[in-house]
Length: 237
Image (cartoon, rainbow, N blue to C red; front, side, top):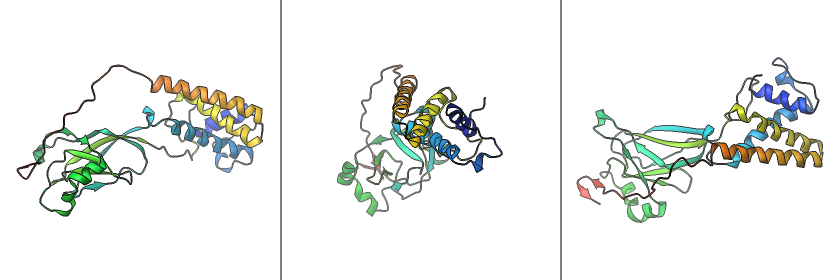
């Protein structure tokens, strides 16, 4: 049994004893078939919205910094950025070693360091990262070279569109997607009692996913951080 948009839709249709789709007529679905296609995407969206840190939505982003530029945009598909993962990559050509960046509060940046945005000679290797009010990020000091910045984030997956599209959710949880889609199918039909039963099953499936994928404590680590000294143009700040 395949694991794609077509197969998930047919699994939902089968539970309702409806006519299944094929690869050739998938795009020309009609009536309740369309509702089941929509329900699969609605179920996947609901699962993805339940937790910020589903491991199957994890991504790593590399940004080539621009000398003299303080503020940068996060990826357009980012749901949650992990600011503990910001780091400058080592580059022998730029004579820079890899280093982790410490996060500071935006107000602290405004109080202590924002003047750098009005100056042209304070660039260096970034040491701090801050989250801006518009959900993007900035660096202090701003870079003086095209360093490579790396950070990790959790994305918002695209909706399934083609029959062969595969969800980011692992296949072993396909039943949870199907349960959620069935729930939305009953909601569309106005079958309240069946909807409530399906909703309970769907929510239990999400809890099970959380237990297996997120609520794991392999070890305990210290989160204490020492603030670094910053040397900008030989001036100790």
